[in-house]
Image: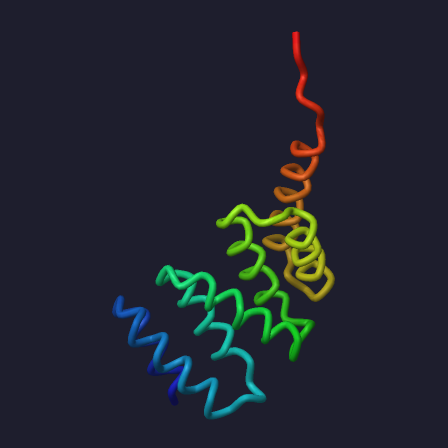
Length: 124
């Protein structure tokens, strides 16, 4: 019920209320990582990226197969210009665990960025 209320709040545009409800749902049923992941996603959208990253890391320790959590964490790392290699590993994990085309696109984008960083600067 809390998850459905959170979805309604999010659709209505109240991300703070939606976050609070997802967070409450996550605490009520720790075996279900969906509300925890959604709470972390909203934290990122609310500009609380450090907290979102910490929560996503916790989710991935407990549920290493969560492709969506890996993708969300990778996107947060990209936004803060984090080291490419660990972010690429998250995208690879997302592909392996069923992230589909969005995970592949994320991986391809990161791989291209990594290749760009490893190319020596040309002069003259």
